[in-house]
Amino acid sequence: MARVKIGTLVVLGLLFCLSVVLYVQVTTVPLVSPTSTSMSPPATLLTDPFLQAPTESSVRVVWFTEFEGSNHQVIYGPTQETVEATTTQLSRTREDAQSHSHTPYDQVTQRPIWRHEAQIKGLRAGLQMPYVVVSTPPQGPPIRSDQFTLGPTPPPGQPLQILLTSDHQLMPMTAANLQKVQETMGQVDGVFLAGDLVNVPDRASEWFDDARGGAFFPCLQGRGSYTLEKNGTRTLYKGGRLIQSAPLFTAVGNHEVMGRHSTTAGLKEQFNDPVPWAAAKTLYDQHQAIFNPSQAPEVERRWLKNQSFNLDTYNEIFSLPQTPRDNGDIQGDHTQRYYATTFGDVRLVSLYVTQIWRMYTVDGETRGRYQERGADLDNPKNWGHGNFIFESIEPGSPQYEWLKTELASDEFQRAKYKIVMLHHPPHTLGGNGVPAFTTPVPQYDQDDDGNLIDIRYEYPQAEDHIIKHLVPLLEKAGTQLVFYGHSHIWNRFESDSGLQFLESSNVGNSYGAYTADNPRPVPPDDRYKETYAAIGDPNGLTPVMPTLKPLMDAAQQPMPYIASNDITAFSILDTGAGTVSSYYFDTRAPGSQAVKFDVFTLGQP
Image (cartoon, rainbow, N blue to C red; front, side, top):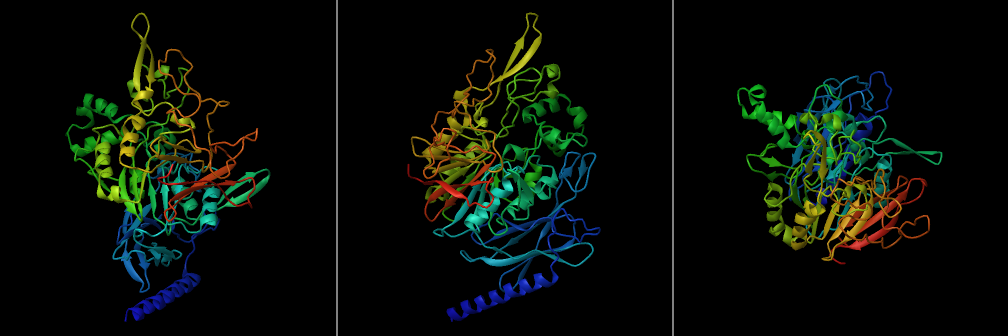
């Protein structure tokens, strides 16, 4: 009897696939290119669907449109079951004069975008099902997506190929990189993305349809159209068709954090203008009677968020595993800023470890990581407070205490592969390892008459929160891999305990590796007491040389890193073999294949 049921399901599945193919060929309104010049283009889906937050018996399907519409549905399985989606409008997606949008804007303008999400329940472990999504616009026929596959989280023991990637940011090589992932690996089973998804998180076109062809979702869905010119040859890259059938797990990077909110300032200006929550709270307390005369808690919460920083657009776009928080948390009782989840044999812990990025220049005219601008000394509202940390990972902080509990949990301890993903590098040859990841220590310089003449910031290396607090915790818990980005470089390191550190963020571009012949820009001023590392890993590890085919420098010596604007890299976690393999692709040879240049085994030095 069991054989009959399985056979029936197979037949029904084949019939469903055939019916969808025939339906798509006859009636589907295609997802048109953003460069369409039709006078009256038909309504389309803004994105393909993508998968989020799988559990042992469910998965979430998400997609976006530029119309509210109706009858948003997921149709799945051999019997074409239907699940209605919940529709919400994104609250802060906007465009401005600097947007690369197909519609020009001369000022900051709200752009209405609707998100549709359906949770598919009752799924069986190890069983993938076909699905399509359907949305009905205000006028015209329903729009159906292409057919993809969905399933719950993979069961233990199922071999998986997981893409490790970071720092897409609409950079020149991103579409080529993701296209090579698909060409090399086929359909991956999951995507771990260690932050910096776009550049300005509230700018809608960077997520959905940037006119240059490299927006976030199109590149991860094989719908991009980025033309890369190398040596006089122009090559069009579409990215990879990846997240329609593979769950996407992200970590918060500094480019997911939006600064102080404004209805008039440009979006990049707002992005570059966050201040610590404590600074906003000080200003609020001084003028509470003006800002919130009714003393309404919701008014206070909204004011403090708008006058410090927020993750609103990131939080509204994604559905990630939820972590409970204290009721006093300004950003809600639950958070997806950091979380843990089991995916096959992997226990993934995603942390919120990032800080504002400010210029390294020390010249008195720059609001940077090491100083305030001279013109702002008498106006504290304009202070940037250096490279301040968005959320603490120090002992006693909510994130640290949650992490201690997670690392001691049965789910983490029993996992075959224990992986922690964050954005900021613990070890790197790149520029963003300096200064130390610690709370800036302000130094107020005064003249002989007591007048403030400078505000500088020191970052004691011995107080690096990642090295001092986080890494010892991870090593003690038996973590095997720390994966991160931020410096737009590929390099890896290994601690004395055997913990592997992989930075695989030379995806779309690079800002260089800081070695003997290329020192980092650090403060030359002898007023700074701290010594900042100009070359190498500031936290003292030697990079591991790639095991297979390292790139060569000008003297034909092997290099332990990739920091190139011509060669792009990606990494693949193979849970069947227990290995992490890294590949590079030379965009100057568009017809070439990706080259596997490094491989290591988790848990083995």
